[in-house]
Length: 323
Image (cartoon, rainbow, N blue to C red):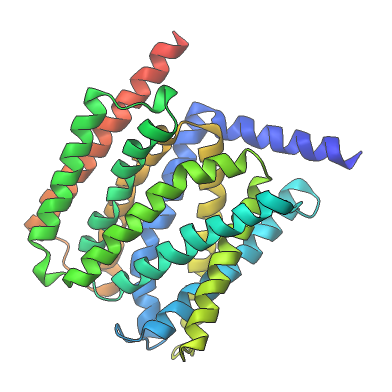
């Protein structure tokens, strides 16, 4: 009798995440959480006394965060489904672990290294390329309602223009290696979108998220410890900050996986416009970074305008489809 209850629970979740209004609200929440990650990571570096050149400790910090997040996802799946999440087997299990090494392991090795040397404004603007890359990749990999249109193309051009402006004027915000690492992290994330969507159609979403975070987190932590990394909080605030970052990962990945499963990739990816906005605002509050640099404000405006254009087209297409 437990299996029908499980399936009914998942069908209710799928119905919620495919509802247009709920999907928008949950996508906003997901991207606001991710927008908070960058400034809290930099705050965590200070609280754990991790220098920008201390790559081993950076990897340990990232790995422990994602391992805790994996546990949170597992507990969340247990609570929502009233049963222990059923892990996939065989080829699907191997694919979930490979996805974790790619999306969590490789992406965040690059992301965390970049975060150590970039300001929140520059880092978030560069990372916003994932929104436009997701739209471009969806055209080639998904087809259907995810195909490229003139409006989407113009939106992508505006967004990449903003990224270019931030990169050219970003000498005070970080180093060239850091900027390249952040751009590479965005490419990895965008490429993982269709892959994640495919896997969640063949396995329980919570199990996919748990394995994604767990495999990637374990790889990062083991590599960091093997290289001599450490994780020693220098302030009582260090532990709650690390737990909040883990919550961001766990909640964000569960929301993202379910949104990607039940909606076209391009419709969800475009809400990444909130990430740089939230990041810039929190970076100013938590890390004392400037809020009124005209170069970054102009770049941010271009990025947000580009994502808005892509999203406007997606919304109109949906309305026409229902009419």
